[in-house]
Structures are given as structure tokens and as C-alpha cells.
Length: 175
Image 1 (cartoon, rainbow, N blue to C red):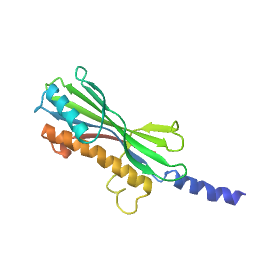
Image 2 (spheres, helix red, strand yellow; image 1 turned 30 degrees about the vertical axis):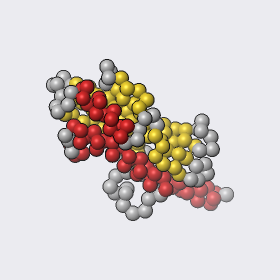
Image 3 (cartoon, rainbow, N blue to C red; image 1 turned 180 degrees about the vertical axis):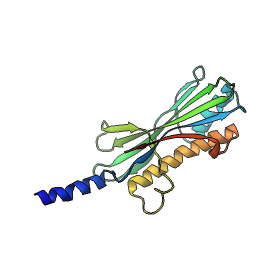
Image 4 (cartoon, helix red, strand yellow; image 1 turned 45 degrees about the horizontal axis):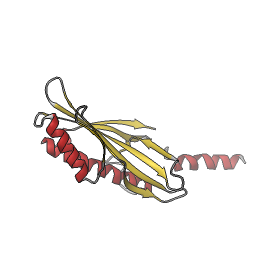
């Protein structure tokens, strides 16, 4: 029995992904002096719609745009899961008069057999090193969600006249 325990624990740790910390993307910040808050708000709304997102909340007075969840992937298994992405955009004027846009992704993983069993969390962000070599079905799905979000961010950056390297990526490591 003891021998089975020593075989079971490493297998369990491998399956739940404790091989190392995951990089979590909290938000992306863009600063620009090229657009007004009103123009940025209208541009951000049109970019989200153009990228296939439905706008859930749009309040120009408080500078907030939130999308409905958009399905971007599935992983078969027991149980199978569907993945959804929601994007929240805050648009503000900083004290120095520049425009600040904060783009926050939120992921929802839904058990396809029981839709009331779901989790919401930040977007897992695969690093360049993690993307090399073999990717599991889960990692491939995470990667497609990451690309969907970065596609929206790129649209925002282009509208602000910025490159992707000029944006501030707020990340953390999570075990």
C-alpha cells in the first residue's frame, strides 16, 4: 500500500500541473496623448465589436467597457471544459493629462456536463519558453485565448499609435 502511495502522489502532482509556476496576466496598460477619452472610448468599443465581442456594459461617464464572455476554446476529457474570455477596459485621464487605458482579461472555465460548475480567474499567459516543444490540449487552448486577447490589445495599441513593446504588462507568478 505504501508503494502505491509513492506512485500516486507524483502522478497527481503531474496531472494538476504543479511542475512549476504559471505566469498570470493581470492587465495591460497603455498611455498615450494622441486620443481624447471620448475618442478612445468610441475606438475601444468598435475594436471589441470588430474582434467579435459583444459589449455588456458601456458607460462613457465612468470610462468603463465590459464585454460578454466569448467562447474561445474547449478541452475534451472527463469532464470536458469550455473556455470563455471577458475583457474589461478602463479609460481615464491621468494627472499629467495623458490618456490611460487599462485592459483586463478574465477567463471563465465551464464544465460542459454541469454548467453551474465553473471557475473565473485571470488569463494564464504562456511564456516563450513554455510555448516551445510539446503543448498539452489545455496549453494549446490557453495559447489560443492568449492570442485572442493579444489581438484585441494590438488593436488598442494601433489606435493609440503605440507598439506592443510600449505597453505595460502586469504579470505575476502563481504556483
